[in-house]
Image (cartoon, one colour):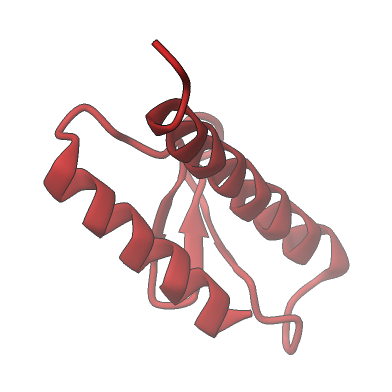
Amino acid sequence: MVGFLDCLQQFKEAVEKVDKRFCLPYRMEKGKIYDTSGSGGAFSIKIQFNSEEQWTKALKFVLTNLKWGLAWVSSQFTDK
C-alpha cells in the first residue's frame, strides 16, 4: 500500500507540472495521508500498528484522491 500511495504521489506531481490548477483534496507523504479538511491528522496506510478505524479512514482518503485523479484524466480526453 505504501508503494501504491507513492505512485499516486508521483502521478500528482506529474500532473501538477502540466496543470498548475490541479490539486488533490488530501496531502500524501511517506506512507501517510493527511486530513486537510477535518481533524488535520495524519493517517498511516500501513495496517501494522494501526487501528482498523484509522486504517479505513486512510484508505478512504486514498480512494478520494484516486477518484479526483481519475476525473482529471477523464477530463483530458473528452470531446469538446
